[in-house]
Amino acid sequence: MTVTAVARAIWIVATGIAFITSAPAASAVPKAQCRNGTDRPESGLQGETTQAEVDSGASKLGFNCNVNLVGSVQGEGANWQLAAWKNCAYYDQSGYALSNIQHPGTAVVDVSDPAHPQITDYLTTPAMLDPWESLKVNAKRQLLAGDQGTYPTAGPGFSIYDISGDCRHPVLKSAVNIAGSSGHTGQWAPDGNTYYITPLKASVSLVPVDTTDTTTPKAIPCGAGTTGCNSSGFWVAPPPLNPIFHDLELSKDGNTAYVAMIASAGCCGGLPPQVKNGLLILDVSDIQSRKANPAIRVLGSLDWDDGSIAAQNALPVTIGGKPYIIFTDEGGLGAAGCSQGKSAHGFPRLIDVSDPGAPKVVSKVQLQVQDPANCTSASSGILWSPTAHPSYSTHYCNVDDADNATIMACSNWGSGLRIFDIRDPLSPKEIGYYKPPGQGTKALYGSVYFTRLVGGNTSFDRPIDLTPAKPSFPRDRGMTTGDIWMTSQDNGFQVVRLDQGGGGGCSSAGGSLGAIAGLAVLGLLRRRRV
Image 1 (cartoon, rainbow, N blue to C red):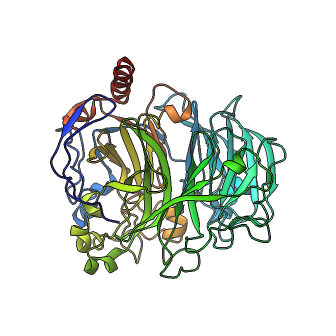
Image 2 (cartoon, rainbow, N blue to C red; image 1 turned 90 degrees about the vertical axis):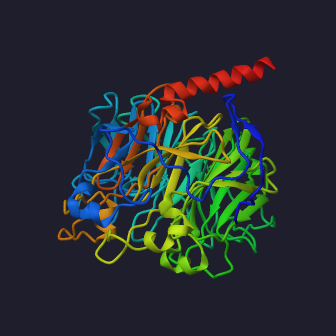
Image 3 (cartoon, rainbow, N blue to C red; image 1 turned 30 degrees about the vertical axis):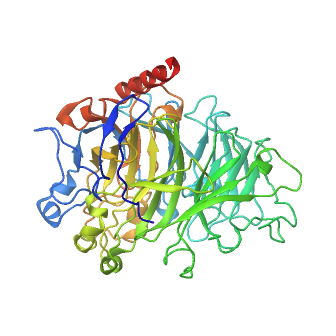
């Protein structure tokens, strides 16, 4: 779905800063202005790694702009997801070569010293051996959970750990099988009493799990005879909606689910062309309140056909007092989209959900490498495996404060961590990036890049690294200050810091995370005085 070009006057965000514009921004967002002499900026398209950078060895050193590496622990590499609480991080490892990993399972990292993070434990229940993208923390009850996404066949396993004590050593509460389910993605309701599994299957769209008693989690069947409820008690999105759900997020009250409906020819055994890629908004209040015979109701939906496909996640945030969804697509049409004027790679978009029944895209957060104008060059270039060109699509985004978002950090497969100023949601701009260094031929059996994409081939020289996991900001891990945490598949866990004003990129966004948070508070105070 394209954004209608409309003239707009003065728009004021929560910080009280006025933006005066008369037309929407160009397709690609403005590039970050890097620091002179200290950064290693990209030389090609925004987000791209060029053949010249590979040939010169520059890609093995990585690239950065207004973002510094504080500390890291590589371990044996990383998989798809990152979760965090207080001074602890949790990331999964590849399930493609479990017999070769020295320490299989989900790694636990102590980040008390950000410059020297240390792995302190591994979680090895069936679900935690490879929870895929389901590894999530519930802040209210201080719980960690994941479902069984283990390659090659996902399973029914589901595990809950208590991290309220020593987060460096989670305490297992349960490791059960949810009959009829299979793992891939999932998310907690904010109160911690429900976890929603999304199996990435047409036969089962959504599996709510009652976690009130963490020792005996159990599936919550939908109400017999309610729309979408099948004979097994599982809810399936009714036609013409896409029944295959990727990841999801919940509203603060737990009554609304924001779901990514995935459409991709490479997904789920292939999908018919009529299946749409996009956002689905569901009323799950019957589940949240434990109403007898619960129904799940559709509130609204939105789909698009602009080359950005393989819907990944739908993150609800508030910007300037208004509700939005930050939606990410983890794939694009590649070269096939060029003749249609579509993007080769997936990208984030900001969706206004003030009216859940009529969500609308207000901006597309495209890098130059994701801009349809650059489709031909962006779908060729270097090889990231023996036979394939890189994906520069976006997997997950997160924000500094979901209640008053000003900064958005996104994990982009081949483009690293990209950071944006979103105080004006109609005109986001890039303010920094960090692209981890390529690891060449190093054998990393916990890395899904090494084990899956190149098949454990130690003769293939991996020129870049892949960055898929959801970044972590201090506020979402229960802290008030700190840095951005991330993982990339070959470099493992990393702590990075947005510069406090060097090069103009960060100062244009209000400086450091602390400074931007201060501006946000000032904006709130101003509104209270009115």
